Every structure is written in C-alpha cells, then in structure tokens.
Length: 403
Ligand code: FES
Ligand SMILES: [Fe+2]
Image 1 (cartoon, helix red, strand yellow):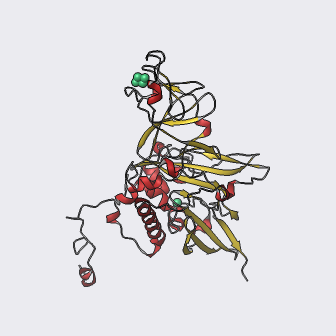
Image 2 (cartoon, helix red, strand yellow):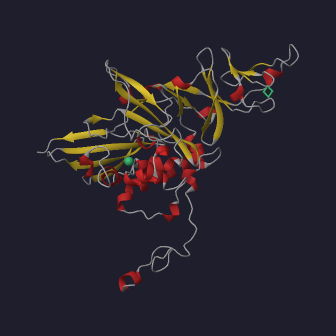
Image 3 (cartoon, rainbow, N blue to C red):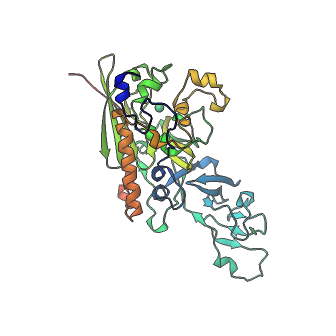
C-alpha cells in the first residue's frame, strides 16, 4: 500500500478498499416504490398514465399491471375502453376470463356484467326485480385516449386533471401523422427488449438526465450507436423548467457549427429525447416511463412520422433475451447498463460525481414533488383548465451559427 492510498478514507469501506466486510446497501424507497399508498405511488397517481396502444384494446380482456396494481383492460362493443380490477366483486373470479359485448364485460362464473365504469348491469342468478346490482360496483379507473395511446387515471377522483396535449404532437403537417409505440420499444426499451423492461422505472427515467453516458456508452466504448459526433464531451447546463427540468448539452461539431441538445424530464415520468442522429429542430417524440411495479416498467411513445413511410426503426434488431453474453459484452447499450444495476439499484452504494448533477437535481425535484403530494398539495404540470391543455415539450437539437 502506498502512503497516499493509506490516508484515503473510502466511504464505508476498509482503508485499502477491500470488498471484505462491506455494509449491506439499500435502495431509495421514497423514489422507487410505486404501489398504492406509497409516497411515490400516490404522486404518480395524480397524472394520466399510458397503459396500452388504443389498437390493442378490444373485446378480448387483457391483464395489466400498473403502479403495483393488477387490472384488466378491454374495449366494449360501443368502442369504450375500460380498466377494472380483475377480481369480480361477487366471489373473486378473474374478469380476464370474462366475455365482452356492447354493454361491458361479463364474469364467466355467475354472469355478473359490468360496464366500463364498473356499474353492475346484470346479475342473471339473482331474483327478477332485485336491486342488488344497483348496490354493488366493480372498482374501476377512468380511461381516455389520445395519440393512439390509452391513458388511465388512478388517482383521487376529485383531483382528476385534464389529459394534456403536447405541442410537438399538435397541428401536425398534412404529410405526417402521430403514431404510438408500446409497451416498450424506442430507447432502452428498443427493439432489442421485451415489452416489459425488468427494472425499476427510475433507473430508466433518470438516464434521461445523464448526458455524460452518451459520449462513452453510445459513441466510444465500442461502436457508435447513433452519431459519431456524440463522442464529443459536451458542456452541459441543467435548468429547472415549468414542468420539471432539462439539460442543454453544447457541442461544437467538426464542421464548426454549435449545437445545443436540449432534453427535458417533464415530471413525473415524461421525456422527449432529441433526434439521436442529431437532425436539427424539435424532437418528434414524447415518451412515458410507466412503472408496472417496483421492479418492472413499461415504455410508451407517441411520435410524429411521415405518412409515406410511417414507423420507427431503432435498436439492434434482436431481442435482448436472444443474445449471448459475449454479444452483450461486445456491444453493451442502455439495456446492459441499466439491467445490470439490478432490479432496483442500491442507491446507498453509489458515488455521485460532478457529472451526475442532472441525476441529483432530478431526484431532488421528484422528492420535493412526492412530499408536496404527501402534504396535500398539487404537483406541477396538472392541467385543470382547457386553455392550458397544450403543454410545451421544449426538446430538440438546436444549431446556432458561429460568429
Ligand atoms: S364470481 Fe363473478 S359472477 Fe360470481
Ligand atoms: Fe442512453
């Protein structure tokens, strides 16, 4: 051991940094737990959360897990989307085995039928004229659809906000349309992933405020994932915004142009990554990182795409589960970086540096908002007035001429 090393006090460790006897580490429950009644879970429930593509809702009931709750989703014969708790309020059979018609979903066991708002509209085994059905109700959540996505509101009924619109997805040019992707796809949930991303939502979401992994993981560690000039180490500013925060990563490109890459986190779990090929202008996508439970999440995106060639191609083109360990070691991406942090990363084990400023700010903001909700307040970004329904995304690659 040299003398310099011997004087360093490695935090919580032996003086020589040995792994032996290191303490048990823990996750930050306040930011990672999302079930009913948890501080973060109740915060998240104040916002509309996407849970499916509209096109995937039909007369076949499907299981759904969002914010630690098991639910069942379907679309009735009148086109209304429904999200109910799966356990039939009669005696607990799952509505996953139910049958859907134009009025709602009917339980397979004794035929109780519920509409999309949980009203019991038929009880074929009860005496004719019984009013029992009017005195029971299947627990349900409101659903609205926009941009090809279905959104659920799982918060307190009296505080339900309007479903926001996003400026970059409004007033769409005649030759473009808005399309939806999800569950998962794009980014860490790219084409290499399964629909379920098997780790805590925050690991994925806070990656959005980590501009310094871009020049390493995505541009120099192995191959260039998106664009070679992402290998330039950026000058980064972090700013609070009306809806959360953003980073602005400045680079002078090889052709002399200056570019600011502005990427926001719109609380609690919306992001809009600018074009990864560095195309100029506003981003064309809005994404949601939706917790299924503490150890899994789903990604959904709505994005602008040309009518002539609709779609989004990104990723390695192979499912992560189909790749060998050697392939993953040779070409690690966001998926490898995040899944290997663990199902819920151990925050007490981290050593955050100056380049983690965005992560630190984002966690602080989330913690403030979570505590605000805990104390009865309204978090940022909730819309209650139709005149405010269009929200500003504010992301993109913005080029400026050098004087
Ligand atoms: S358990 Fe559903 S109708 Fe009896
Ligand atoms: Fe990344």
